[in-house]
Length: 363
Image 1 (tube, rainbow, N blue to C red):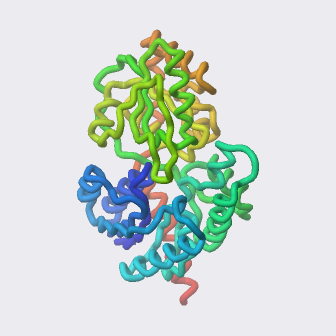
Image 2: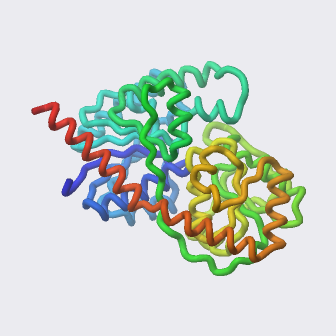
């Protein structure tokens, strides 16, 4: 494959945006790819647009279409999928890569790769109890249809692949392709003077409530970066940790360069880009013991379940610079497995296989 025209969907709300730009940049370096990036949901902010403009071969389209998890009906999602299919046709895309299973129900001419970064059904099973509410049930049904209509389904970890297979009754587990991230600047120090977390704080799956409760129990300052209110109206109240608000990428990099003790108390995390960014900066990691984190970070992180264990782990690392430095070094070494180049190379292998199958079928 000497060149590639990829139609890629994304949103600007969370880590999918970061994933999309890193993949596009790595594909451009690998095969001089042209990536048509179709954004659903809220428009990218100025910082996001600046970063997108720096990616070679990237063509940005703000569709104005709703996010799959804020759409009001299956009919609205089906209409969105058909709009995306038309845009992909107009772009002469060779491959379509979707960031949500529900979007795969459109009539696409090019082969469709669906990357399940997250979904409401698996989120519910990890965060809530009881049967799916009606608003989630119809979303799960259209997502199941989209998964079965996709030529290839991908997840960012093996643990999440198993979760998706079980949730949707798939005959085969999705292919697992670990996310990659460009390395931020090396850490300037290893003070461990504060605990830090970052991401969509409003998302119950991130379990910021446990992080905030740990802040009240610890002798170490706790700081959190990210929005406390989401586009779906969800909100979290943070009382004990210091809220830093939204941090532009350069500010986040500067914060991680101080090598705080990075904490993720997540109940639901298909991969965890913020954890990877912290590891790349040499931060010691304190993570919840969910299967994804065990898969990616066993031997390179402390695992703590609940506020008391998190506070104890943070206090322990803050009091022991040697252990903190060793854990940060282990996390940094592990992070070298998860690069955009490795991610792009694996995805290119999948694209080639799909295009080869399509050509053989047409022969």
